[in-house]
Length: 265
Image 1 (tube, rainbow, N blue to C red):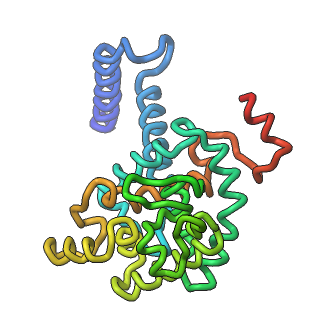
Image 2 (spheres, rainbow, N blue to C red; image 1 turned 180 degrees about the vertical axis):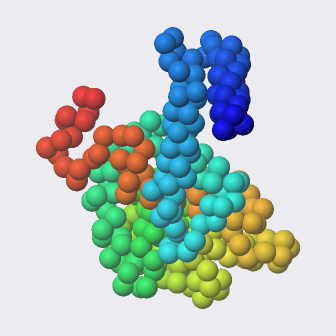
């Protein structure tokens, strides 16, 4: 009985000493009148909840491209994707205009792509390439919604001459792009590589694959533009489909009724 009482007293004494020791070393951090042990426990619970929340972030749970996995377990891939998500977020660009165009054009583009068996995610290529503005052109002569160079446009049935430029016709140019994407898929058999090849060209991508010995887009060392191309497509897709995930006001279907409202923001 005496031994038990002595043991109990020892435990209490140790607890008191530890509490005093903790209190003296952390007194500046603990709010006045708060039990330091309880405060530390509460802090740890909040920290754990924050970490768990980040790990369970619903955004990361459904990031794919053309139904192919994006290796987010690779820190470099996740960091790069985060970079372009920020770049394409509402805080960085005038995105209301982008959403209005997306609501108007993307359903039409997706329908044409589906008729050719092309995954729906490829509808975001013209957003990245031209911001859905057919007047966009590059120093290399690429033009229209899908930024075809004249030779490739003609190869897939588009007229490009002094009188007519079918690259600026959404329906015709999307059918041509679908044919081109399908041809690239026959060549590479991987939709992510197809997207990269659309940007850099099939021959150039094949040489990179052969030289580096890997067929994973995420492992290839490509030029800056092509190396970021798929990340840009995924980022645009994410911002358009899930604006609420980035802390912005949810945008309903773009229409003229709300246009003036948003312009005054």
